[in-house]
Amino acid sequence: MSPLSSGSSELQPGSVSRASLAIIGLMFMALLSVLGLWLGSSYQATVKRADAQVTAASKIVAANAVWLNSLARETLHRIDDSLGSNVLSADAERVHDLNAAVADLPPQVTAYVVGADGLTLFSNNPRTQAMDVSDRDYFTRLRNGADEYTSDLIVSRLTDRQIFVVSRRLERNGNFAGIAAIAFNADVLRPIWDAVDIGPNSTVSLIRRDGKLIARHPEPPGPVDMGGYVLFTDYMRKATAGVYRSYSPVDAQDRLVGYRIIERTPFVAIASADIGVLMQPFWDDAKIAALLIFFAVIGAIAAALWIQKLIRVDGLHTRQLAQALAANQTLMREIHHRVKNNLQTVMALLRLEGFEPDVVRRLNERISAMSAVHEQMYGFDQFSGVSAVEFIPSFVSTLVNVHGQSVTVSFDVENVTIAPDRATPFALLVNELIANSMKYAFAGREAGSIRVGLRSGAEGFAELSVVDDGIGFDGDTDSPGMGTRLIKAFVQQLGGEFRFVKDNGTKFTAVLKIAD
Image (cartoon, rainbow, N blue to C red; front, side, top):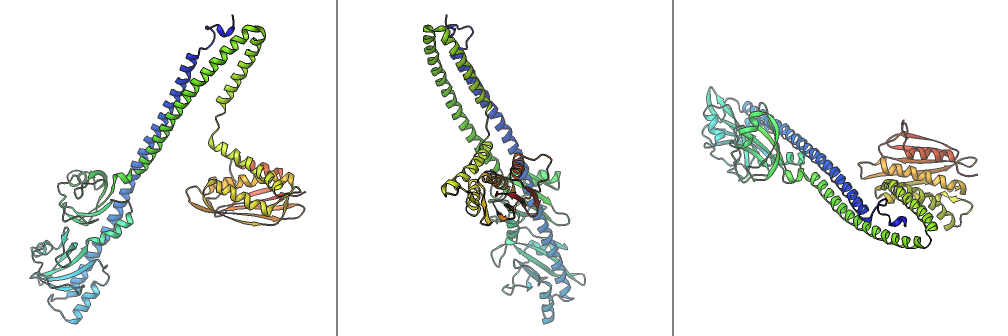
């Protein structure tokens, strides 16, 4: 009986097919597990980064709110001092003193002095008209005995702009004499919004501790009372600062909100960012994962079909071998045995050869370096040697362009000739230096520069220098990588010495024997 016809000791095509599909399935499940762990890590990192962003932004808003509060209080105090004993007096010296008191105010800020009857007496804005503010909270609260008051968001009767007002009670001889007031335009928060830079659809706000909105950028449609909002009913009762997610009571947008109660002021500082913008890095990773899964599914289906095809072809070949073995069983048994061993060896090699893309790329670069030497010699009839001034710029520029980075390359190469038997190790050395710079020197950067020089010396020696402005490497490592070991080997092959210097980047210099 032919060995191929004995079903007890041979793997049947069906079992091979099931085993192959099981392996593909296990590999696919492993890929899903790795992607799941990666996405989980990406989500946690994105959430932490988002919390840190809005927390930092709320601190910036709080710092500026402290400055605004100090500016208002100090200016109001100076106005009070400059008015003297008679608030109603309007002599030239008094007006000069009042102007000096408000000289340092930003353009978005207007100062007023209002008499006891609620009519405007003085202002640092010459276009301000006399106006009755006796019905405004920032006036009535002080008339009723409060020393200072910060209004919520109101609309100016003079400019129709959204403003908030900080006011101070004026007393003379124990009697109410009027108020001094500082009015801030709502756009005073615009520079703060620009500074925090937490993406489109973000907001910065100042809220009074009773929940009344003081100012916001972008500006709201009108005054807002947030006293019944979750920030005041829950979060602020638990902590003076924090981060939470909620829909805005102003525009119903889903945002991550950082808040901070500012001590010794009436302000609560708010910075909020759109959840979609903050979580975009995670969604970008999710898209990459989905693409990987899609291609993995396509690859798995293609592999399964290919395996089925191979099994069918192998079955056909097996039947053909069985027919041949029937005619010359002894000879064909020996041939079958050797063919089977060879096929098993090939399969084992294929399983072992798990080349990584980076390994393939580096091998291709090194092979290209050797090819470039031959191209230079035979392409330009330079059989006696390679012209450095022609070879190095062309070769290095090609290496840099392959990496696709915005790196500027400059050359200082003398017209020397590299001996044919030294051109290949020289090219491989330059390849390793440029490859290392492109791979490590400019990590996290979009641009950089590399300078390559070759200066001739005595007795066939020359000095090679490769300098980049990257992160710097001094060559001092206990575990040198493959690139560093190859550099050392090529320098030794060229009978030279080298060193790395870390100085605003990496400077490699070597004295090499390039000519006989």
